[in-house]
Length: 314
Image (cartoon, rainbow, N blue to C red):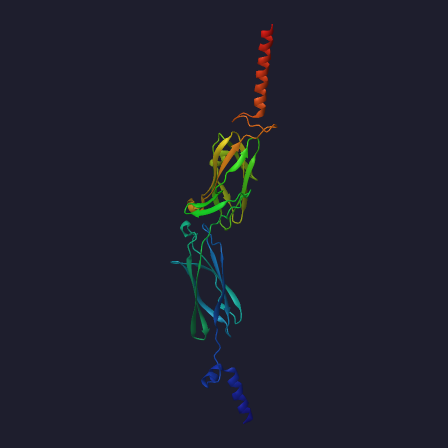
């Protein structure tokens, strides 16, 4: 009799089915929860990768039946989907968009819906649904312009605009001035662009340069450049004033990637006042005439006066 009792107890402990029939045991189950979401390369001209981290808070492994991610009306491609998530573990699921993000999606949220079907227990299917969104950004980092002259940044459908509100950049003939910034590709895909500098050539001479080379105005206008993913290119524009007056300088950075996106373009605009520097006596004679010229003319006039004076004395 004692042996029989021990056998019944052993069967009770190792047989969940028998125990369930007697109503004395809780069925073991898997239960998935969303832990975190991470997005890579959510930039225009890039193909985003969306990564989810799921935790199994249940007491048995969650066997994955199917997992899908939809963005807008499209279904993403699965990159990593585990066959099961053990009890107490966090596992990663990864999906990639089918195509690059179009220009029109800049700053517009794209809805995401993750759906995961899994076995919560033998014969029981559960669904985990998670909804979120991503907002595609500009792959070109905002420009940090040197020298910092109080640049004002504004954006519209034609891109980003940098200007110096209410002030003019003063330059003197005989000195060189420069403006620098760095173009950084935040995404993973290659970007193509061109730069054009417009100004009045009767007032300024401009050289644009990178560590790889220098370009005059016409050379720059006929050239295009590329930025690999994560790459940065420093640009420097050197201005040499050649005549006094007022002019406007506009540096345009135009996106050419996949046909180009106008809303990724950038321009830097500022007014320049060019003056003739004072000579050693602190004198401004007239526009285009400095003190050296003035004293040469004065000496010439004095020589002519002395010559005629001596002639009249004879």
